Length: 490
Image (cartoon, rainbow, N blue to C red; front, side, top):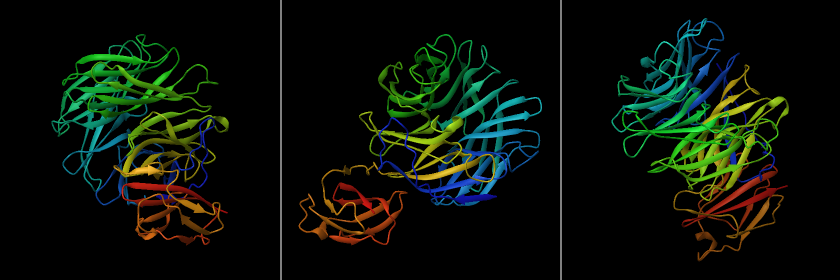
């Protein structure tokens, strides 16, 4: 098995959006794979500081070369591989989309299995339970005789789980959105279909504060406004529909991700085609809806000159929202960059980073590590051993401050000279500290998010001439304030 580490030091900022140089930086990057295609779609942090990542592999596992299996990879805190396991059969196709804790120290993985890959028969939704060492506890299939797939799973208050995806076995028309409830042992309790004459899919589902469920995805049935619309359904505790809403215009609008925003509201992110774009390009669109009837609390589209499709959303520690996905049409021949966009609590973009290599990269998911560090995952076609490698990156949000800490980027203190050749002076601290030594600890980060300097006292002068030319960030903490300044070494 092959895994490499590369630091990305060049950021390809999306055209039309203001480049935030103190936005997201990359601490480390890892890619995993063999001669064919691999990807990660989900990950979870483990108690030892590492991660368990899931997705699919075509290079390893059972059966013929190139037949995908579910792939589970355990890493340490630096993304270095500790072990990996594949799950599949010689004549089946297996993919994983989400991993969660099962509540008993083990993990559940939701995905799909095609039991006859020659004729495409027996396409079932699947849930795999593993222990912390990746050993299979059980692998169960769900659905009927047609096509059924899970895309997400989340825990419920009764100790069970709610899964969502699509069904053709139980659908009223073509393909319907689908919810299925299981108990702690994976036994089906109920399943329900939702939709019209066209295509519906649920990408996310959560239990609501009233004991019901809310799911989102998209639809192209005629109860929408355009070719595709955001599709949100609220149900009771046994999956019976209480209300349904679509959101969109006469063009294509697809909701990919959702997260609870409060006890009774939800953030939804998707790709929004306005019709004024050049070609079939999606803009980032975000809305918050209430739980009572799906009414819009606020909605905003963020247009630019390149594609922005958010496949995952996560709340930031400073009350904003971080979206991870892909940015298309910025390269030649419709290749894509990975993209992370952050909006603050005023719904303004405060960081927007697109990055990648010569070919295509995509981010599928994002999880939180600690106060301003995140793990993002997906696939890269530019680096690695095959046509695509699974991709894992630890990223630092340079815009964020810990909970209860005020972040100040203007004023606070002075750096001179700036730009500098290495010797810098710190002065003019705007605090009531009695002396410079009482200011607090100081940290200096390079553009990749690595700490190059740390002290528990703040000196008046520092020599950084041994470090490379480039952009650095000086962070000084005093009481409940973070003073942040950008330094240029030349």
